[in-house]
Image 1 (cartoon, rainbow, N blue to C red):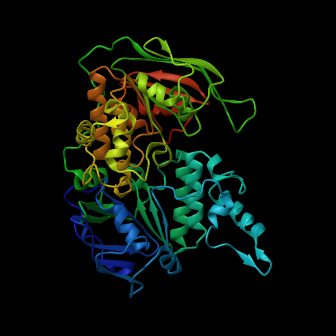
Image 2: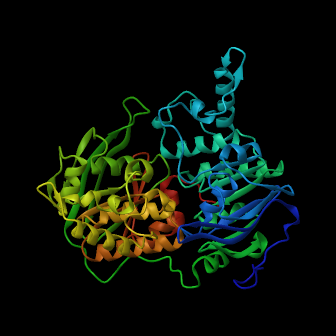
Image 3: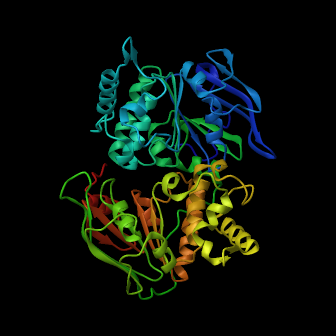
Length: 516
């Protein structure tokens, strides 16, 4: 494997490019999202775009797929100059995109979501039977047993991601852009997706792949492109690069995966979940969380690891009061929280960073500052009057603490990258100065640099006495931050480990096959 500096900075020749973008810029006021980018998509190959949140990856992809128009620059498709005014125009030219944030209609069925806006018609009207048949075939290709007629809102997040992928595949595109397609998928589902990608490229389809899961992306890429602060910093063929090369060009040579904070003793038990049971809505009489008990002490970071469907999300949501418990009890500093609403639990000092930030963590019509201050509103409202200076001080502190890349508190939260939106959710909850925080897959859509910042922030708060519960499907995250690793499988705790445990032991305890 080549050293960090040995790989080509100019990358492979563009002779086999099906699409070439030249000197593309995009400005939003005084903000330069893209700065003269040259980018090639190679026919029948996977081109992976690496970069931190806010580097411009999603902006570039939105330009190529007709979501936004560039401020300047040129795009050639098969040697002819093109300019897309809409996603429909891009789709008509064979370009389809799977967005990082799901764009499904939750009240519609899987079938209706896949064919929304391009329904299959016959003389008598829409051919619903043919749409259902094709939907079923797409689900079979992705090895998912999803009923075409089930409403999307009844699916777990990973299954919704599969529907988003199926919708893009149904277009029969020549260029398929995948923006964080695996962020909510299990390891098995990622494996299936990679098989589908290789099948598509063997048929001449060009793939643009964006992922913060660097090791995973290396498995599928043919060409690597690194974008930093709106400009291309490096390109190379996959055979010439490794993980170190990617990290170097993204964030420099000093990236640290982190380690659990040390140098202090844990305090008393802050959070107790006793004999928690949560009903499985998919199985009548079944339990998705089955008589589970867990204690977390002040200053302790407990990582809950498990595969998709292990019950991690349902456990955290039950503790936070988002879903009802069949049985069990939650205590905070020895006080039962029975009967308290989500807001009541936040007021007592128990907060949740939810898995689905778009649906549960943010109000898209509000600004960055309004989202950050929402959970702490009681701290600066007296007799129906808001203290604006105190609110602004809280917002400014939260932006600094979580390192949110934004033009300011008045910026629209929807204008931020996905990772920075996630940091708004985390910052909002930490701004309440909780006693215990639950985080459900908080690194979804966050780059390695931002992830390190989140780890640092949680470590600092833990050293000050915060009890942290961190749920993830990434083993390395557990090893990077946890004092104690709790493995969940089929709704129960299957194992517990301390620092220094082998990655393979954690995976084996979850029921995950260990390869190699």
